[in-house]
Length: 327
Image: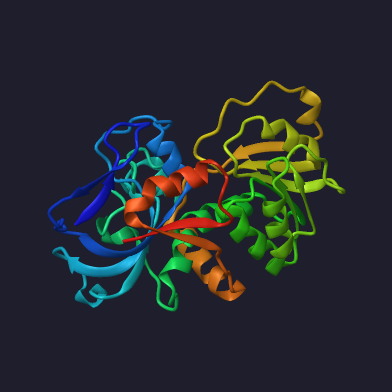
């Protein structure tokens, strides 16, 4: 197999050839068709997440075909297209797993972070954490759904029944979520980097009723705001944009420090919450919604060996939608 490997955090990935991996009991091997590139991969590569052990193969938005199974796995899975996301394994016995909150598991494993991921030609997965992608005929289009779509969906659910929804950071997750909001009859207000007219035009093309800079006030108070950009300074801006009783949802795994702000921004029952990881139930529910809503993802394809270029383009904001690596 070939893999793009993180040897030292903060340094470019290195291409390696390795023996093809063999699944253990309860596992399967995926021959990767495509792996999308997520902002969380940047946090992994840049060493911004704790406990990272190298060498590590990043990547957790995997679509591919099952080509080898371990003991105890149904043979019917062989040849089937499946998706693999961020949540790679949970313990099943901690109080969070027992209360249907496996996203908060005390002993989790994460694809591309604590176990090798999808910037490769093959990946080993716990069979209980892959999702059949029957009906998703384009693997490139499906790959961003496996994290950008999933975390966006969990964030939207956390926002409740909000009618006016602000999306801060119009990247891979927001461009999927804007389509779902439009399909559901919600109003989308898109906030981008100052001066990013391309992202604002993209948002309007996907149904946003307003698009502007993250420093702008929306024309109407928002019922909820979801922050995807890892910028703590957006938190007080989003709080100032939501109406009384509104909620601000932080949808990323990492964020720069949040600056101090006056209590008046939080008063009148505004809420500030975070979203952590996702559950398998989230994935099952979202993939059904994605099919019903006819989600169309915008992607830019890179060959696997250009993973460093894809990460650089994502970091610099040169992409609309999602980057995907094609082995």
